[in-house]
Image 1 (spheres, one colour):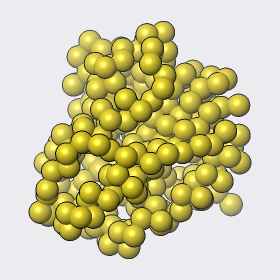
Image 2 (cartoon, rainbow, N blue to C red; image 1 turned 180 degrees about the vertical axis):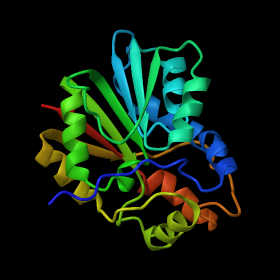
Image 3 (cartoon, one colour; image 1 turned 135 degrees about the vertical axis):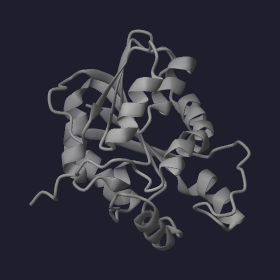
Image 4 (cartoon, rainbow, N blue to C red; image 1 turned 90 degrees about the horizontal axis):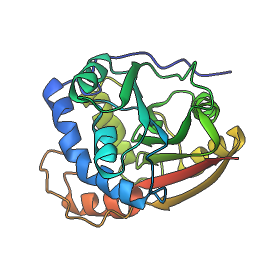
Length: 227
């Protein structure tokens, strides 16, 4: 039986100011991720950002590797509205929701950053992305929020207290199996972020040693190719 569909929310963080600050914290990670992606020339490609929030990842991607067009989709209604105001004249469309009805074989490249651990039905999500990709299209799904993360028990409580979302308990292997079952060729690597990591006293990793380990060892990048 399929799990309950993901409902729309206002913002991811309960605190709107934290929502606005999230892009600044993620920006160095996004830039590192973009450098990891082997698809260098996107000038004639269409891109999907699943869980786009305020649209920062697509704007960073366009500045580094311009694409032909893109769609950002997210369940956070206020965040999507802000993404639309921030896009300027970039070839980006935004949509509210958690499913990809009407987008069949549309995208060459799809990305999600710290989203898949919030998806209630991972099988439906994998099927959605597979259907939305062109033949040979690639989905990069990034997360450190998995049960192999030693911080996971603490983080589950933090997510519950700080956000409007509900987390799912899955291991790295659980994700691999779900995407393979959907029809993807599955591979993965550690993010291995190589930049300086700022100290944040009241952040997700108050023990600074944990922060260093998380961004270099724990955070995973799945590379999922539509066969």
